[in-house]
Image (tube, rainbow, N blue to C red; front, side, top):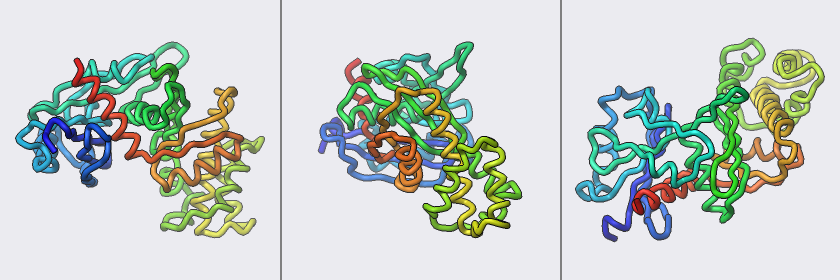
Length: 303
């Protein structure tokens, strides 16, 4: 296979590095590499050297292009790429890629932002997955849920990203579990407990609100038979339940969602979303990233 038939796509976030060698024609992943060398682990000057070391044997002397998405394009990353105003298409992303300093034929994909009097939000990386989800599902219109440290709910119409909302569900889960009294029994890893999760989902709709529901992780552990190994799942249920409740309230017309994420996150989100009456199409996050960056790359080639 010639260099022109391949491309390298990299999702580089705060905590992780994920690289994929892709067949341009089929979109198939030929090889992949992962590490925990995210932004937190590297100084700015180290990015080109680390990237080169990870993918040099795929590059064929620089002839295979590299496309990077995620926090790698932030001020804290390799080199800052712009955040484009909504609405945004994959073609718009391709038109504003930034050359990655220190590495030939490498391009950083921009993020997006929504800034007005009613809403202020930013995104880096998930926009690529959303466009990849459109490509994989074969539709120009979709609503997407992208769970994670900072969950994103995105709306796409006529092939353009028109709205999105960020919710700090994953980060709050970590904070409550490891830095609060109610989370104290959940410090150790434990398997997902569906029953405890559903208890948390139910309490997210309590008249007393989510702040009380989170404290119930402690009171239920003391007096209602919530075991230590169930506390983490209960907290997860409360926070994911609140996320879904809020998005259902702001998007009452919502009926179907593309759920984009790793399997471990898709399971609890599927329970929460289906409990809220939504129809779900699950998509793996790596597949969405590959498809989205492939679409951006094709538009960039065509310039």
